[in-house]
Length: 290
Image (cartoon, rainbow, N blue to C red):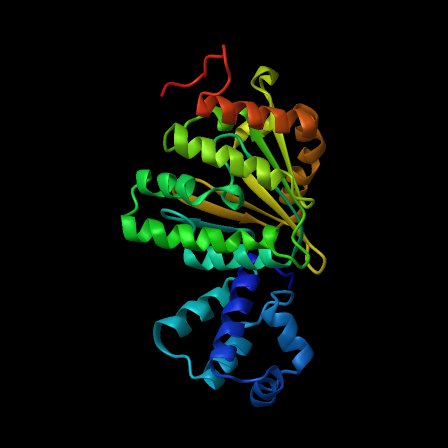
């Protein structure tokens, strides 16, 4: 059985439960009859645990009730094609899988025709999106904190993930949160784009159609498992890991890059839009209303 997003989530859950009990993999493996190498692959999501193995591990860890049923269902469904979940935001199980993929990624490409991607958002920009999207103030602040934690995969000192962001110029010109918030977001975006591991490419508004207009997605590649694609929409989230589905997104990379301005030209666009938001470009009328 191939690794997939459900396997990543299940492995991460089992790892966290084991660590909470302060058990080593060797000791847990001895209790359930699984060698350390296999258990390590299970916890990394490289090899999905079977329902029987999951039941044995949960029994050894003393997991009962709703949590046990949830993880057994996850193990039972691990072989299913792709993974669709519905509801507002990213459901907890899918979010855990996404964070695991981000943590071990060797390359990420994120395409956004409408908004600045989450890994490049400022707290104020993210908070605006979440509160205006209907979340309570408390829940919005909690999710912003989680989003900022996720950003560490591209800002950490040791082996930050190589990250390519492709976005539409209109993303830069939409004053999400007002001019001051958006100006701060654009300055942050420019600073992030100067990092050695981060590349931001902008599709100029004059370009017209390009395939990124179909919707946002993130492609995640890692050394140990096949690449996956995650798509997030208003009330649905989807992981794609079947090769025939993922390959189409991989093949889009060269086409999308051809539609963008170059690295320096993209940086110039970001800086110009920041100055527009700040009202600093003399003789230039911003293209958005205050």
